[in-house]
Every structure is written in C-alpha cells, then in structure tokens.
Amino acid sequence: MDVLYALRARARQIVGPVLGFTLCAYFAYHLVEGDRGLLALWDLQTQVRDAQATLSRLQAERDPLAKRVALLQGNHIDRDFLDERVRAVLNYGAPGDLVIYYPPSK
Image (tube, rainbow, N blue to C red; front, side, top):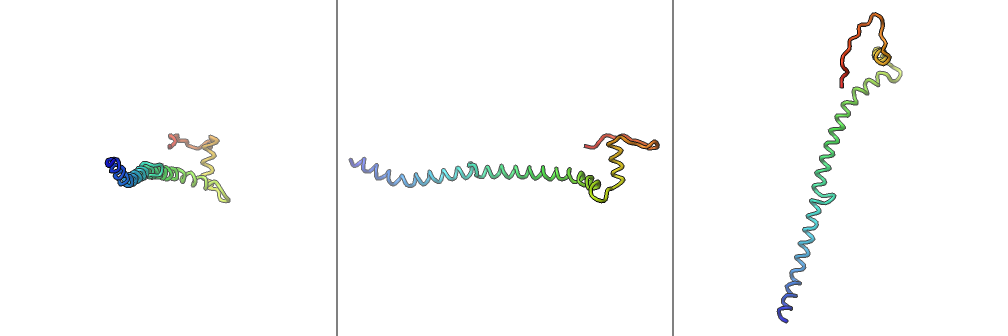
C-alpha cells in the first residue's frame, strides 16, 4: 500500500513537468515545421525572390515594346517608324529600295 501511494505521489509530481515539456515540444515543432513555420517562411521568401526576378525580366522585355507602341499612339505619330512598320507588315517596298534580310532578334 505504501508503494502504491508513493507511486501516485511521484506521478503527481511528474505529470506537470511532462505536460509542460510536451506542450513546449508541440509548439516548437510547429514553429519550425508548421504551415506558417520557419521553413514555410523561407520557402515563401524564395518564391518572392523568384517572382521579383521574373517581374524585372518581363519589365525589361516590355519596356522596348512600350516605347515602340508609344511611337504609334496619340496625336504625334512617328512617320519613320510608321513607314518601317508598313513596309514590314505589308511587305511593301519602292522600286529603288535596297532590301537587306537579317534574322529577327529573339
């Protein structure tokens, strides 16, 4: 009987720290591995860096195209550029023109 009482007394002393350690371990695990943990944060930061690199690359590709479109818009149309586009699209050339073919840039 004394042994059973001693075991119960020790169990009561051990339950609190074991429960506290278990809760700390649970929260520490989810701090690192959870859906919003440190590893998920690092993955999101990597995705943001990749998206920003893609954005800057696409903006660099878009800027020259926007400049060319701006030459054909509005009240002021660049006649040289318009003439160049008409000749390229309609395959038009004057009898005295010299045509030089080159591969299109990528």
